[in-house]
Length: 67
Image (cartoon, rainbow, N blue to C red; front, side, top):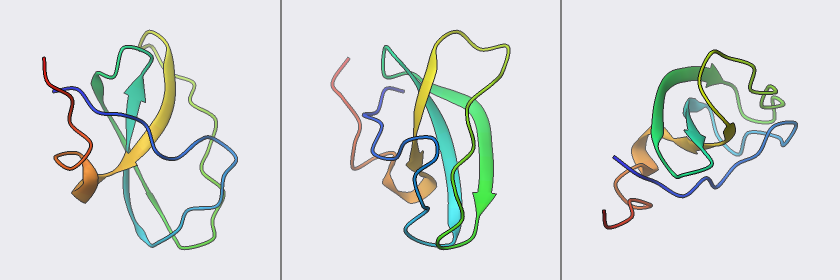
């Protein structure tokens, strides 16, 4: 599935929720974190290629791109 990142590393999480990593191509990665409201979203360091941002778990469908 593809999605558009909405949240960025070092940005404050807008709500307590699960945030899923998205790469440069829009691919949703199998990497997710739980953040509290106001907590800084962490830098994305992983074995995945080009992670750049996050979407909230419940927002994946709303931000999905046509393939």
